[in-house]
Image 1: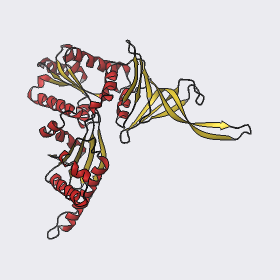
Image 2 (image 1 turned 135 degrees about the vertical axis):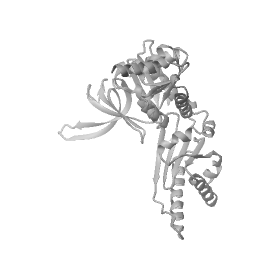
Image 3 (image 1 turned 60 degrees about the vertical axis):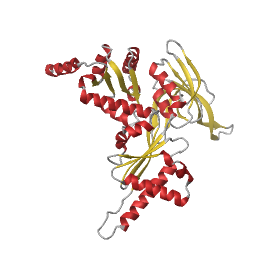
Image 4 (image 1 turned 120 degrees about the vertical axis):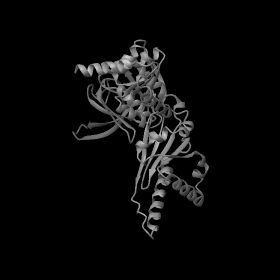
Length: 384
């Protein structure tokens, strides 16, 4: 994302002009834009023209509109963002108050105006425009007959391809059918990697599976690369990393990303810091439960005592339409930072973010134990 102009007053009112440079930037825009905001962008409108003879013709014209957002639709697979609202600025083609839907486009600037830019929204702008946030990783989680090819960026996990093929079982005295099926499956996975992984950007490709499937696939892929003189694969052989996973489903990515050797390789990526923070929370929950809490009420009580060392919060909570509730979460984030705590805002498009959402979307690791929070919960249970 490229920042063109930023004009925000001390009281938080103002606008920001941005240019999305890649499809992932649409995810940042989705997290920035709320219902009630105003967006000015270039769009195409169908216009009816009536001639002097009474015949009408329609044409499509490109014009710049400013709309007040009433509905936001984000397609996670295509990374497309559609904004629906009423026109609020004079335009020769569109009446004031008329509805229009704008599709935000890559490499076309848009201006977002808010009545109040809070600290979380401003931080999202800084994150989206920081070029160091794009240390990308690709992952292939596989088991016999099933594979998911994923791209792990700084803010989301995208499943680029799912390969699901039937492989005949090994039968006594006849293994050929099984081997043929396995080769066909390996070929599909290899083609999927070549089609969806940009080796110029990706720094590490994880291949994870139970048993020896990953080793068999790795061996097959590089035998084929030598045979077909595939320079892309041969030049990037060092980027491939073989890791154990319990299955070929997407949720296995969590255990893959917590593997120490993977953490070392992905040390600079935001995705890896989220995984480490969640792992630390689970470990604390098992070893010292009085220093790990989740749920808004408990976390806010801990924050009042300035006890929070690390706050884990999902970006889902900042997309809610209840302004009062959003302000409550923003105040929590600001308060934790003021008292010297660290805040990790998890992307709900990552496996780690999905897991945090299952824990109410907010959790905290404390500086010191607060067993009284558990006691308060037990007392309220007895009262009920």
